[in-house]
Length: 132
Length: 361
Image (tube, each protein chain N blue to C red):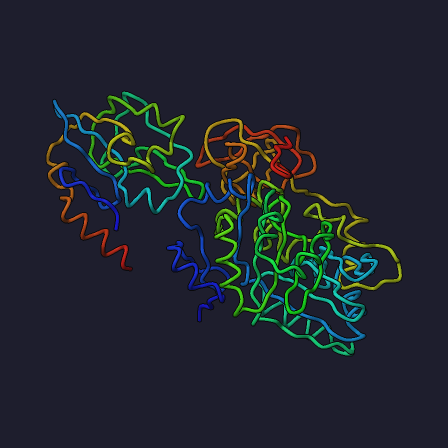
C-alpha cells in the first residue's frame, strides 16, 4: 500500500498539493504515482513565470519504463521550480512528498484547492486502483 | 488463459511486479530495474526465461529440415555442441522469428524461439517439416534460466554438481553441452558473459534459490530489455517483424548465401532485394539534447526523409537516452528525434552501446 500524507490535498491524476503562504502551493507527484512509474530518470519542469491551468500539462516525468505527464492541480503562476531534480530525478522515487517536490505555484482561485481530494478520499482512490 | 512458468511461485514470494507478456505472467522487476541492470553489468543476475519456446528436432531429417527452414546455415556448426543465431523467414523474406539453434548431436537439434510467436512458429515448422523424417517435440515441461554477468560463471560454479561443472568448464561462447537432463549454453541476451540453462521444471525452484543464495540478483523483463538495448540486440516484434527482411535489419551476416545450391525459404526474395538494393538500416542513437527517446518516435533525417525509433529508452550504463532506429541509408552522423513535439538532437552511432561492461561509443 502506497503512503499518503494526511495534511496534503490530492488530484485524481496522482499529484499532491501542499498549502504554503501567500496563496502559494507546492506540487509533487504521489508515492503511488512514483511507484507505478518505477525508476525516474528525467524530469522536465515548467519555466518560472509560466502561467498554468488546472488540468493542463505542468511537467513531464520519465522513468526507465515510461513517460508521464504531470497535470497542474490548480491554475496560477509558477514561482519556483525544484532545480535539483534535473541532476537527481530519482529523489522523486525516494522522497516524493518532501525533497521530490516539483514546483511552487501562486494560485489564482482558492476554490480549486478546496475541490481537490482529501487524504482520506485519495487513499480510497488508490486502494481501489491497487486492487483493480 | 495466462500461463505460469515453474518459477512463478518464486517470483510471487520475491514480491516481483508481475505483468502479462506473450501469454505468460512474468516478472517485470523485483523492486528496481536499475539495480538489476547494474548487477548484470558488474556482477551477476538471473532471469526466468522459461516462457521462451524450446523445440527439439530429433531424427536424421532434422539437419535437412533446418537447412531449408533457416536463413543461416546449420552446417556452419562444425560439430555437435555449437550454437547458431538465425532468422526464420517466409517466402517473401519476411522475418517470422529470430532464434538460436543448438546442435546437440548429429541427429539432434534444439531450437529456442520467442514466446510471443510460439503458435505461429510451431505451426510453420510443422508445416515445412512435411516430407522430412524428423520428430518435432515442444519441451514446455522444461524451465529456462539465464545467468548473466562478469561473475555469472564463478557464482554458477558454486551451485553445480561436479559433473556439470566439468562439462561447462571448457564451454566457449556459443557452445552448448548436455549433462543428463540439464542443458547448458554459453549464450545470452545481455551483452555480458553467462550461460542459459535449460532444466526440468520441477528442479528449477531449487536451482533458482541456490543461485540467489550464491549472491546472484534476480532480474525481470524490464532489466532484460535495457540490457539487450545497450548490447544492440534486436527484439522480435519491435526492431523486426514479418514486413522486414534480415537485410533491412543489419542481419545480412546471418544469411548464409553459400553454398549456392542450398534452397532455404525466402532465398529468392532476398536475392531480389539484394539486386534492387536495400533502402534502410538500423543505427544506434544517443540523445545529446534533453529527454528520453521512446519506441515509435519519428527520426528527422532531413526535410524529406524520416526514420523511426524501433527501441528507445534510458541507458543505465551511459546515463543517457539511447535507441535503435530504422533510418534511410543517407543518414548523416547527427539527426533529430521528435520527442513529444520537440525536435531534440541525437548522435548517430553503430547500434551497439555496451559490451562486457564497457561503453563502446
